Every structure is written in structure tokens, then in C-alpha cells.
Image 1 (cartoon, rainbow, N blue to C red):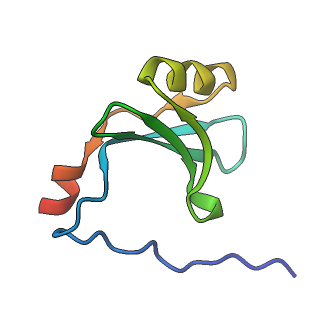
Image 2 (cartoon, rainbow, N blue to C red):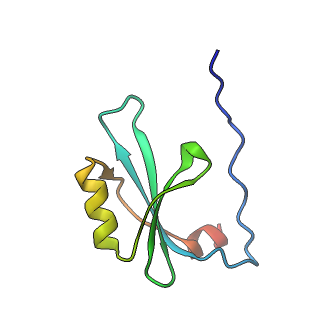
Length: 92
């Protein structure tokens, strides 16, 4: 029997700089349910693609948004509308 870890991700500490600036969620709509990846931009302009289903394991790392976006689009991921900033999360 396969089990799924439903433990929520750790809460962000508002007093700590977590090193990220923007977050986008990308989906592979061909999967059922759709497979999700997170595109996380840090304050120095670098971008990480993380897999939230595998404890936020680093999938890819890029020096520009365009490079990260190109990889996601080539793998047929689609962005969900909108972008979330760290300031929005910290303020709640």
C-alpha cells in the first residue's frame, strides 16, 4: 500500500530572510492530477525549480528567468496565472 506524506511544509519565519523574492507555480496538465513544480526567484536574480512533492527537491537551477521558463515550456509545463512575492506571504 502506497502512503502519501501529508505533513504541511514548514512555516516561514518572518524574522528570517529566506532568500527568495518571487514564486510561480507551473503545472503539467497532461498528468492526472496535474503535476506541480515551483519556480522560485531569489533576490540576486537566480531561479530554482523545486518539486514540492519531493520535499522541495531542487530540479534545476538557472541564472535567468528566461532560461528557467524555457526549460519548463520545453517540458510542456504551463504557468498558473500570477506570481507570489515573499512580502505577500510574510504579511499574510
